[in-house]
Length: 241
Image (cartoon, rainbow, N blue to C red; front, side, top):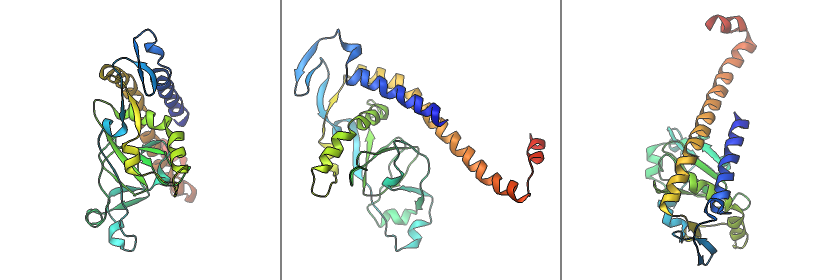
């Protein structure tokens, strides 16, 4: 499944580059001057904030209070961001942990981006359900008409730019304000709609494959000790079929 997902990701990246870097489908359209050079007419220069419903950094509940870390709310650290869907977190927190910290719950399809310490800066993740995360990441809830798929691919392609910004900072970190105000090219509404129609099933399949892979790993981890101890035999598994 990893090979399949790698292939699907390459397809999505290739489509993004063709459309929004090389402008290949729009070569015969009218172009206009902009601060980014010539761009298709009807497109505009905006900021990352313009494509978000909201954006904010996360927070870390006090690790000295064990009651904060015995819940079922996913809490991700930036080391868990691997440019893919975020299925489950290493740590889970409680509602009271959120009440007593700057941690916030973000909804499904929120994009997380690491903003601390190059070269971690720019690494991404996509929430598959409501979750929280630490202050070293920023969460971007993308507008529905834009589509998180476009934003994810855009942020992935901007990674070197963000790392250059971080390297120029005193502590090699970004902040929410820098990300919000970062200038980007925003395609016209009809182009974004068409791109979303094409890429949505690709991302849906990647997510489905990741969940199936996780379920298989859980099944393996539960069966292997029983097979090794003799509690369960291959014959038992065949009979169960």
